[in-house]
Length: 450
Image: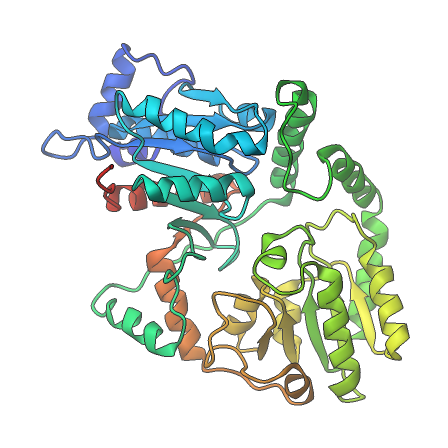
């Protein structure tokens, strides 16, 4: 038998049709009330936009209803619909230039009954979401940004305004210490380790993009922000799975060659990641690779190697192994630069002499491990005193580290303001994520609507 708290958290709460006159819904709405009989999200109307593959948005929406809130959803392609199956949804089938007017009309229509008070979306840099964030700000609608990363694998972002919003994260040590002082007396947050199942993520992504492909005729004008179609990426993933045994054997060979040898670690990021496209000056990973290899060739000691590690979710749109090998040979460091597709990133970070990244979440792993870190792009942790303030040449000659205590303080501020303990790709992690997101939503009162 579920407790009231577990019921409120939104797991197995209601059937997908949400019959408004059913006794079951009334019982769940009562369960979502506080001791005064008032529903804790009464008067809130939450609009969901694009999400990630998987059930997080659906589970969170189901948790909002018994708390007295209303839910709405706008579908942009069939993958959204396949993960939803709840009422209160409509579809946007126009072109990108039609989206602002569509959203304005949608919000005006909803306001005739109850205005939308909150918008929840995945990723604040998607073109449609950037428009929604601007319109939401003009109407004093709270926007909650959901993202992966930052402190993997035990946390996900559920942040009012988003971590990249101006002033969301301290810009320097002085601001960080002021933010930390505000937490004096607040109990230290507990972090439960979260498991993430790659096969679960794979199947959720497969069904999401299969629905997107077969339902494309329903959304003929939709333009993805990604670099390739779902079908193309799916075929590339099948090729990777077919070669998985060969890739594992090659990774073991490379790792054996690194035993007792000093090396710098350079983890690649996804080429279509907005962290590369928006939050760095490189534009793509190819330019970042050229920069790092060039500086390594010029400044790193002759007995040190460079390990370039492929992102585990890279489907292979570009042959990075060949590109890295060609660049290394051109610079005369072919024997000192190795490409790695696999391996334990945590172990590599601990063993590395230093980590060079654009703005990868691996940077947080390095800081937590006390490994010197050089960040070349804009990152929440790129604060002098936390990461190395050296130039790339200085770092590759003799890497210096920041103060681990500063990163510990930044970590705590992030958890208190922006992150939720949980994950998208395991049953327990998802339950914790829904519960934490629901709590943050309750603790963030809506802005007075204009």
